[in-house]
Length: 246
Image (cartoon, rainbow, N blue to C red):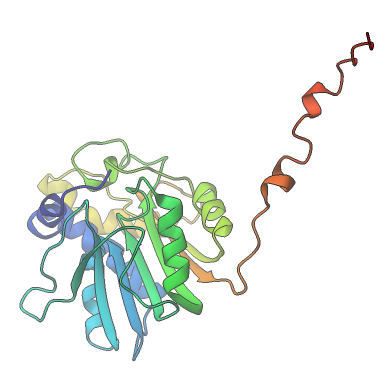
């Protein structure tokens, strides 16, 4: 279920908790993608809060927003770079995107397989994508009041398996949002120390979001057909003795 764009805008731009989330996740994205010079960068879902750093060097930056979510003008104070689109039919040329960033796009969709097919289509050969989804084991996916509690959470293995099935090769896997999802002043002051502490313990899987960078595989791995998945569809009847002829 897609959240309304007005709710997302209010959270990320007008609340202290949302601004902290925005900066924390954006820092991780920029660590993975420090250079985008003369590249085409596309965000899908509500990725606008993470895209602004790319405006300086990228050849083109576009924020695709699904119709059921709604669209807003972005970036503020500059010519509009946001586009309203159907979630399974993007107005983007095949193989034209160098980097794709997906936030509140995969985990909120009722047609996630078709969304992943679109992700694969628009990326250039060996293009890179970052998928950001709620961590199933974290407090963020269970506590109401943030966009991450309304989405479909994943474990790391579930997300990797899903993306491999659609032709993406996992490359880098990090977590973020070790800070608790509470808006009090004390917790906002402690957000930085919580993030540094969480990142310093790689074995701790308590981050609120999974951030997985993947590479598009070309040629796309072939999925098993129905005949391979169910090689003996009537095997359950093998033990039944045939009736004697009359």
